[in-house]
Image 1 (cartoon, rainbow, N blue to C red):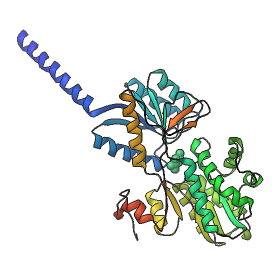
Image 2 (image 1 turned 90 degrees about the horizontal axis):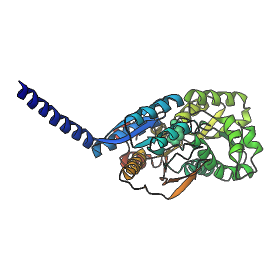
Image 3 (image 1 turned 45 degrees about the vertical axis):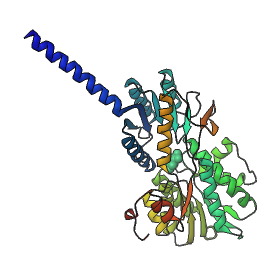
Image 4 (image 1 turned 60 degrees about the vertical axis):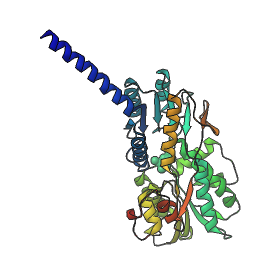
Length: 364
Ligand code: BGC
């Protein structure tokens, strides 16, 4: 009997070693925290992370914070308890996430800020991002090119959530291109007295941008975007309608704003921007209901984040081409390029590039 027990426990012991060795091979000591499932962008990231990790043979936990910084902090703490060595985190609120980054740093975990920069702390090791100023510049370039040499055109500005550092970068980019054309009378801003007041200023401070964003924020929320657009249209006189130019901050809010402008009978034509290449917006572009989007190839961002994590795990440091000041420290980064997508190149940029299959769309 004693011998049988001894043999059995030896077998169990060996099986335990085998099981943990397999788990080691299949798992990566990395945790990923994304802001919310309610903004479609982050479902793209989840799907692309899952694809990339499955291909590389890794298993990684992905948690969502559902728009709640307290839940985000709890997510980070639970990953720390599970022994992660690298945290990839996209903050819901750039400033509030500093506490979560500090907790990770204290536990010896490397912190990679993903897409959105965590602000006000030195506990961020690396920032994986697209060039967000360039995203805003692409909106500005697009609207300016539709304006041509005309003057007095109606411009409506909308922005992302002020709690998201990116909203400022996008706005800065848009302002770089739109401000000279507001100053020279090409455009007249119809829905922000703060933007009108600043229209002679090429470079705005964060506080000045904050005042404009405060008036035109969508909070990244479809319903807020829709009601803001409706309120703007209710306030606008006939002369402020006709052909309109709309700087919308992302695809979800662009569709909501476009729908509101489309049903106003005094609006004869609208041009509207976006970003993320959400499937619904790609269809809107094909159907002529959204004018452009900015493709941010999330496959690239997910791959960059995984490469950065692997670099840290091997004791190295990820590639750096520039740094971003987060109000406390300079955070190294290697921003990725983006692509402007209009009806003219939608098939090449979205389908031929392998981003989405043609079967996801009608009328291509
Ligand atoms: C992201 C955008 C996204 C927005 C709303 C931003 O930080 O960069 O891609 O549309 O958040 O989720």
